[in-house]
Amino acid sequence: AQSVAQPEDQVNVAEGNPLTVKCTYSVSGNPYLFWYVQYPNRGLQFLLKYITGDNLVKGSYGFEAEFNKSQTSFHLKKPSALVSDSALYFCAVRVRHSGTYKYIFGTGTRLKVLA
Amino acid sequence: GAGVSQSPRYKVAKRGQDVALRCDPISGHVSLFWYQQALGQGPEFLTYFQNEAQLDKSGLPSDRFFAERPEGSVSTLKIQRTQQEDSAVYLCASSLEGNQPQHFGDGTRLSIL
Image (cartoon, rainbow over the protein chains, first blue to last red):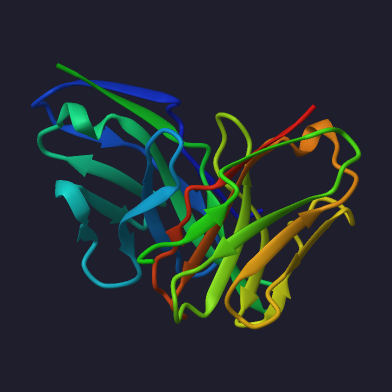
């Protein structure tokens, strides 16, 4: 079955330190991968995507993600965390389904940046 | 408006009542998705529209759930004879066609008493 896994329910990091939020996937074919962020009582906001090309993708708010085909991973990173980055982060993959496509989301990782 | 708009933001209903949730996508967006998000979980796919055509409804959990998008813009998700397990946040997202990212509304939080 096609799936997305976010192995960490929560990640704590000190402000100013680098952060990594992990994501691995299991899909057939070439994956289209996405990261979204969700703040309390809000919908998801798009951060970045990987379709093809350079394995290092840069996105909004200083976030980047590295696509690793051999490890089937798409980890989200930021060189220096801010307290305002504290939120819920979701990894997603677009897959072919029933002649069209749909998105599968991970269960989310709560990022807490400590001042 | 500039974003995806969902209404109502909060809905409380008694078990057995019917509810209707509305989604106004971004103007010109061809694709529209509905998701169900349980507390502490990621969004789970319910259904997908391309313009007015419902191309995939495989995620709808039962025949009590029905979605429509008759003119290819506004969409309504209807739940008949609501049950307590229907309590969740229902998210709507729209996108231009192809590989474009989805734009999400803020959701409707449905509570069934």
